[in-house]
Length: 400
Image 1 (cartoon, rainbow, N blue to C red):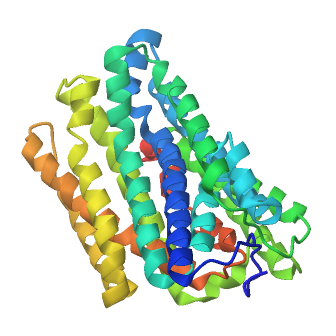
Image 2 (tube, helix red, strand yellow):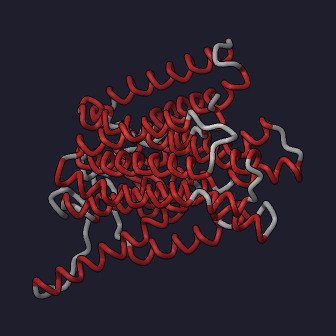
């Protein structure tokens, strides 16, 4: 057992240099397997966006129908993310990831495993930077992949495409990622599981339906009050549990809470922009799905570069300075985007994408690294579950 309680396989004694090389190679292979797992989830959240106009034309889908095509996935994901992350900590993160046919089982396991593979701060920052780049790029690449599929196949291909990709990722994880779980194997917190799923589900459902109901309508108010009440009950229950599903004490750490909020804002902004700009290009600019997807490359590239640079800068200059800078850029990008109209040129929109992507990368990856530095290593899933970007899963079709 390591000092942190993680079970590690015993290895044959080897010379120090050779052992370091082997350990580095194992960590590199694990990173190469886990980043595609995060990419699959990110692609799933946005790959269907460019298919929405095709659904309107071929299936005569209404606006509400389109919202639910996108948001049904998000609703289930958000409702079960806390539950799935808890089960991963208790039953084993690698096994949970491999059997995770659902995104809620996969997503928290990826970062939890990374934090146990990369224990040294600089290495962990680089790994999380690449993970953040992969996650952000996946959100932006979803429409690109979807556009290519729609140019060559029927609209259902955007759903079928992910099956073989997920299978390949599962094989890679099974071969090279080490086992990891909470060594104490505490009992399952069934009350916490039920309350968290119900509370998150009610909250996301209300956010999705509020534009149709009216933000000030009775149903919307009841929905928000109910979800807040259930989640408050969840927090009270967790504070009294000997083995809680979520360590709510983490939120007493200002660094953890601020970084969690930054991640939520960043993903909400990027997801909303991708959803809206995909429709802007196809409905107002009359671009094809593939032409639309190609025009989204600036945001994908800028997110990737900024995520990698951001974590390196955070190690040198501190997370606070880098994340604050990212949020300022993100705010500037959103203000700029708010001025766009049907007459806005592509060059103008490309500039908005680049500024948004840089802000996203400088915010999300360093903030995630800060979160994982605060969380106890034996239960990194607790931290990852508590910082899941709700805005990313409460899809932006709910925006007014």
